Length: 387
Image 1 (cartoon, rainbow, N blue to C red):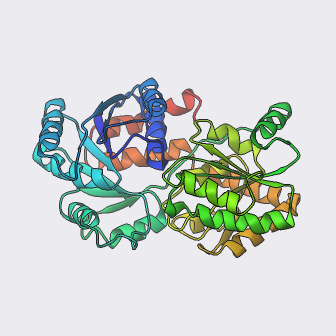
Image 2: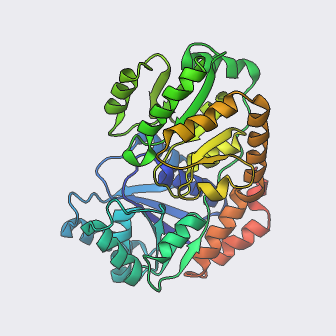
């Protein structure tokens, strides 16, 4: 079976993390996987991770909203390669891939990864994406239940399949390694570390997080906030932290490829997003056994509704601060929430079940997927150490 995944960009984010996860899941089964990048540039670390997982990575850069030459090259490539299925991720790919698939005679799955677009719902790009989802895509994958409910309002009669993101359980660090890493991050391993990970964009609510941390720090002066991620608000956020006189207490790490190592070194994980899909970062924090405080957007309410975390309204820094302060004051509560979160990941959000669900979706459009489903049932993924 030959699958091509098409993405807007290969800069690291939630969709790209799931590409690496997919590659590592399908490679042991023998699936032939190609990833197409529609932008000019790519994160070399991400490309290396994909290639090491047995993926071929190719680029068809689109210099503007619609480039006839780039589109023609993509269609010719798809026709020549005779893929069994196209799977598109992110807005631009959801526009381009279904049309290219129709012209190539290849079925297409589009993907929706957010449960909200009210801030730009009237933009030409969103209107084009809605048309493509309704009339050109064969099916639509939503990466969470809240996302699925939202997707059905956009997709007309196109079937929507919900498959929640998944992660592997993250093992704890050895005590001496954890102490050393905490010292490297904030200068003093005894400080309480609040961690947040994500692209530095408006949607992630990092200004609210800084406002909340100002309140937290006034109550808990030993607390430190660590933010891992890069984006167009990096300079504005570092400047705002200094305006709040938090320059010695907020640590901006930039883009990091070792987030799964950072998580077990922290005490609390915070997601302050204003809109979301199913955040891989929250799943990873849960898998590391961290107590999580998150806003009630996207899939967060489903993930953390079973005593596995704390939920607060978006855009209310005072409520966010109140939840964080309560956890800083109670190590027992942090441990309880972290254990419950990790157990939930192990029970419902593991790799093998996710891989089975993905291939079941693929089998709806290409019967060739059934061969690989049988391999999962035969224990191939367990044999290589996956759970």
